[in-house]
Image (cartoon, rainbow, N blue to C red):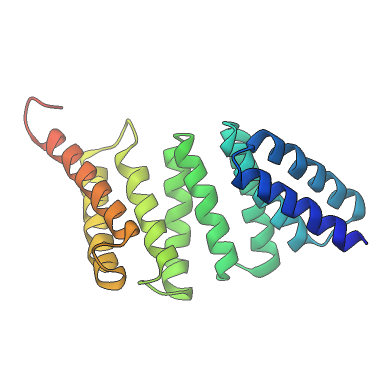
Length: 200
């Protein structure tokens, strides 16, 4: 009976979210998290519910709460699975991207500097998640107001490498490859503006 209730709440939350009823989805997911805490649910169940809730927080513009929840999910998965597990790496990536949304670029860069070598070792250089992490790292470099010339150069170099790998692995027409190419052009433009005298 309890399993049925959990599944029903999860499906209701997912359905509301998919239909664009983000506030209603949030209410359901907060109720589910409260229920799971009350019942002493296993950590992996709690982390899954928290992940869904974090997505809903962000969907309704509560980015700070979403980021805090993603930090908790990352911390929990680190304890549960260790740093090399793909679920832990994805949780770290999600948390880092939430920090970028909040313009907490130095925190995002610091986290990504730690986890990118782990991802390269554990899941491989050419995997989508590793490419996403490197893409996010480059964005955290060039989007920061205080980005130095060296930061901008590192961002461009990183995106050039990620773009090359994504074209080879995914094909140039893939949406991820196209997205990386767009970010590369933005980073290159930012670098040119700084390198050209009188423009920055």
